[in-house]
Amino acid sequence: MIDEAERADTRMMGIVHGALRRDLLRTHDALTAEPYPQGRQRQALGEHVVWMMEFLHAHHTGEDEGLWPLVRQQNPAAGARFILLHGFARAYRRRAQARWQPGLQAARAERAAAR
Image 1 (cartoon, rainbow, N blue to C red):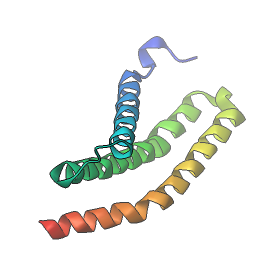
Image 2 (image 1 turned 135 degrees about the horizontal axis):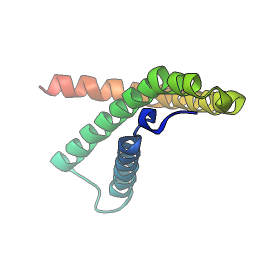
Image 3 (image 1 turned 90 degrees about the vertical axis):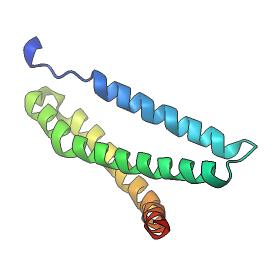
Image 4 (image 1 turned 180 degrees about the vertical axis):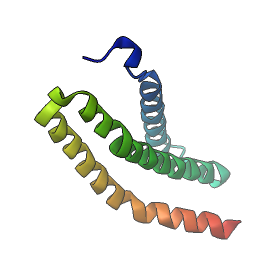
């Protein structure tokens, strides 16, 4: 059992997840309802989406490499269920990255060319 003093404070993780969900929902709303964004608004929205996808990828990579191995180490009782859930999450992220990566690379190249 983990002593309360050793327990990780995960409140910030909840705040970050909530902010990303909020912004993704707002982005969906902005792109699927008239009037559709144009000009500088469209450019700013696109840049924000690219930033969110990059941030999300870095965030989940950090969880995969740092958090989840530590959780398994600290709580071996999590066992097979945890490993199964973590495997599903990693597989989902790999599929999502494969889907989004070409668009992110194109957006980065376009942004660099505009500078």
